[in-house]
Structures are given as C-alpha cells and as structure tokens.
Image 1 (cartoon, rainbow, N blue to C red):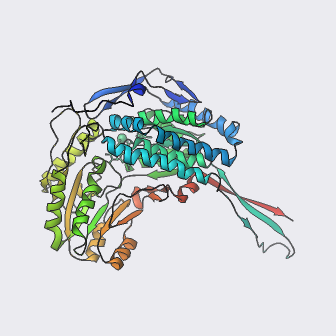
Image 2: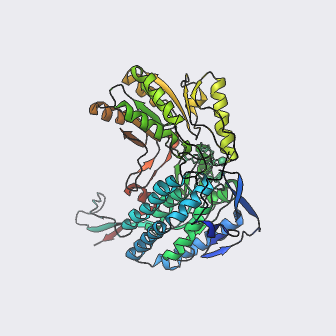
Image 3: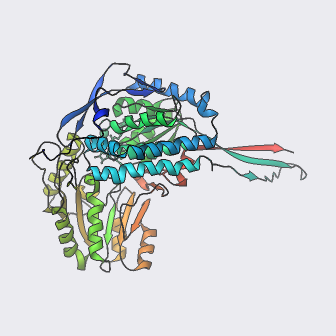
Length: 500
Ligand code: NAI
Ligand code: MG
C-alpha cells in the first residue's frame, strides 16, 4: 500500500537527527553501559531513532541527582509561587511546540497527528497549567486537640504541614506517551518533589523532548531526570530502589503487581493506574444514534489503545441489532493509515508485540465461537495495522470479554433489564470506566452509583480533564491521577503540636 501521501515530519525532523541521550542531573548523557536501543515508526516498521538504553546503573545515578536536588538544591528553597510559574511555563512551552510534539508522538506511537495535537498535546499543556495553580494553594490546618489524660487546663496549639515526599519514580506506558508524562510530572512538581521518569521503551521520544523543554522552562538540574530503558531493568530498579520515596506507575495490571511487590523493600508509596475492560451500556430509551457514535469513539479512539476504552458493549435487546449494525458501519468507514497521512482516522498498533497480542485475541475469539461482524483481521501492509472489529456471540466466559485486548476490538452483548445489566457490567476484575446511554436521568444516576468504576460517563464517553480525578476500582489500580485528589499522592501530612 502506498505510503507516498505521508506528510513528512516538518516540525520534528530536527529532533530526530542523531542519537538521543538520557537526562540526568541537567545533562544529556550516554548510558553507563554505552548501550542503545532503537525506536520504530509503527506505521512503517522502520527505525526512527537510536536512544541511550538506561539500566539500573543509570537509574541509580538519576536517583542520586534527584535526592541532591530535593535535599540541598534550589528546589527545596524555591517559593511556591516560583515553582508554580515554572510548572506553568512547561505548559506554555508544550503549547508553543505543539506541532513538533504531535509529530514525535505520531511517528513514535502511530496515532493520527490530529489526535496527537488535539488530545495528547493539548491535554498535556493544560495539565501543567492546572497543576501550576496548586503550587500556591497547598495548605494544612489548625486543630485544637482535646487530650483526656492531661490536666484540664493544658492548652495546645496544633497545626498540620503538607510536605513533598521526596524522590519520586515514575514509570509510564506508550499509548499516550507525552500525556502520561504530564499526568505524572505535573502534580509531582507542583507539590515540590523531584522525579526520575522512565518512559516506555516503545515511545521514549516525546518525554526526551519534554525534558529539553523543562530545562528551558527553568526546572533546575536534577529535579526531573528522564531515563528511557526497558521495564525489566530500568523500571524494575526504580520500583525497588531504597532511596526512592514513591513509585507511580501506569501500565498493565500484571506489571502493576510486580511493582507493588518491589516497593515493599522500603515501603515506598505506590500509586497504580492499570488496565480496564470497561462496559459501555446502551438502553433502549437512549438517543441511539448518539450512543452508536459514542460507543464507536469509545473503542476506536487511539486504535483502542486506551486503558478506559469501552470494550464491552451492552445493548438492551430491542435495540441490539440496530446498534451492532450502526457501530459496524462506523467501523467500516474508519480510514486506517499512517498517522502522518492527513485523512487517517486510525493508525497502526504501537509495536509488533501489541500487534501479536491483538491478533491473538482475534483468533481466540473466533475459536471460542464468537462472530466477527466486521473486521477481525490484520491489514496486509508494512507496520502493525489491524481492522476495527465488532464481535458478537461472546459472553462473560470468553477471554475476549474478560481480558484487556488494548486494540480496536469491541464485543457487543444484549441485556434484558437493569439488574441483569448491573451484574454483567460489574462482572470483571477491572473497574476503570463505564458509559451509560439513556434519556432517563434517574436510571442513569442510579446505575452510575452501582457501577464499580473510577469514571462513569453518561451520554458521552472518553472525557478527560486535568480537573477530573481518574483511576480504578478493583484491579484497575490504586489512587487517582489528576484533579485535587492526585495531590495527596505526592504529599505527606505532618502534625505539629505546641504546648502553650
Ligand atoms: P507494561 O505494563 O509491560 O509496560 C508499561 C511500562 O512498564 C513500560 O514503561 C515498561 O517498560 C514498564 N515495565 C515493564 N515491566 C516492568 C517491570 N518489571 N518493572 C518496572 N517497570 C516495568 O505493558 P506492555 O507490555 O507494554 O503492554 C502489555 C499490555 O498492558 C497491553 O496490551 C495492555 O493491555 C496493558 N497496558 C495498559 C496500559 C494502561 O494505560 N493501563 C498501558 C500500556 C499497556
Ligand atoms: Mg510488558
């Protein structure tokens, strides 16, 4: 298939020249081992750039730098106002370099450039702007303790301080590389922590460019260190490191459990944003056309590589055929192509590994007796392309309904009444998100309460904002990203008591 209509990278070209290094203590350095790895354009399968491969030794160097910057460096003395202004400037620089960052994201991850620009880059800038405001609004309280075992005339003045944790390790995935870096770095910096960030090995480029922009924004040396490398080496060292105070992770539930175990050595704080198998629910009293469009966007956005993708579609019986037909025709009209082609709606999957995983689930679904109403196949062209797929005839026993596929694959299932539906919707070890489509507002709000998930959409899907807490019930994770709520993941509370 022709790749001639691919628009060349006009803005990202300069950054792609030459090998990329690690950011440690404000300097761009080679890996201690001297090793490098290659990152690939998933739309062609061709090498995009060579990147220094950080491992345990580099993580150790980065943690040392972050510790020094936290304890002795300017970051420990900076005023909240100045800290906030630096975080705000990071947002400004992301916005100024939006085209370049979007191209890096598209080339490294595969997603359409319009998605990278409109979602990833725009949300990343906004996250920093939002978090910047919190730097000056962190506060404790004053408290009057009653101490029953002391004489009645004892008087105290007590107050709480909210203090940064220290050195934070952050391990992020490849599906929204820049945005996941922003979700992690924004709150960590606004609250005064220092960071060692390990981007995913599939998509290190935008985090490295962000590293340059952070230095330009005035982030002092050592405050943010960016160390690309593999999970089993660099990531694992960060999770177990005895001098790291907290680890924040986004990725698979499987690795989330490994990280939680590794963190027990020094009982570092742990937050996990993990997988999902989110139900999208269409009642027969819904605006069915809007529900169809929302269900299609809920699964096909970003190639389905979204932790909160609405991958289980429950439709009330009387509308089942109509909705399946609608979402199938939406799937067929999706233009799949290289992310740099202007008319591309959906790009390739991120890697050969992810392609193998998704095509494995498609074969397994068919073997287990499910039907591919549309799609179901890989696309025969260079790169890692699969067809948008709609499946029927599967149920809660099937792997395709239970497991996170992380691709453009939706399983549609009919339901009869609300109780039956609520049981099915909650029949998952995940609990990240859900969607409800109905015109009955009481039904919608009552069901929103019953669903065990961190985000419930009503008559919409995939709405993210820096102000909105995001995270999972059950095995979808620990803690929340974004909103005011994320701040507590990066702060300790200290009680100070004065005898008067
Ligand atoms: P993964 O969980 O292995 O990778 C995510 C991050 O964790 C990467 O930075 C990786 O280098 C790191 N990592 C891997 N092993 C590690 C270890 N032992 N210690 C510390 N860090 C480690 O995810 P992967 O293999 O890329 O994708 C597999 C599946 O995971 C996907 O098909 C999808 O189902 C799920 N996933 C979910 C994501 C989400 O946003 N919740 C994001 C990425 C993947
Ligand atoms: Mg993995």
